[in-house]
Image (cartoon, rainbow, N blue to C red; front, top):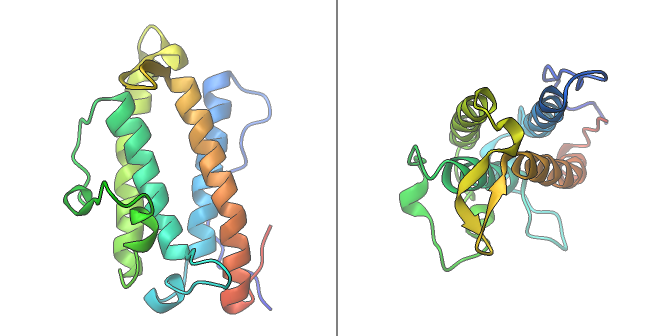
Length: 179
């Protein structure tokens, strides 16, 4: 057993304002996912561990889609068309997980990086505005706009939950462990 390849992760601040604290946790969770998936081949990223069909590659693509869906699409109204958007299968709720099979690690990380870059830009612009974290989305969920605060908290929850999955998948694939 070894330790998964190290990725620089910066601990979230312990004494900062709300926005810096939330973004610190989001960045930490993003870096954790990257860490859990680094150094693996396309075959390894596509390896499910029974009884689930979940894969690390599927997690990378899913979180790229989640970032783009909540921040770029719902919050900002679709300021950038994600490069994978034309492939999206609206009829398959598991599309982001299953369509990652056979995709190169470089492409999976590129999609995640693309989504994060757009999210970071949208978030920075909103935080510079008068409502900050209280800024409301252009799009709606259940007929209501959503605050940037809620979206960031939801992203932290998504990454943290899936990082638990990634931990187990990575250990099953090559024995690598980490916090």
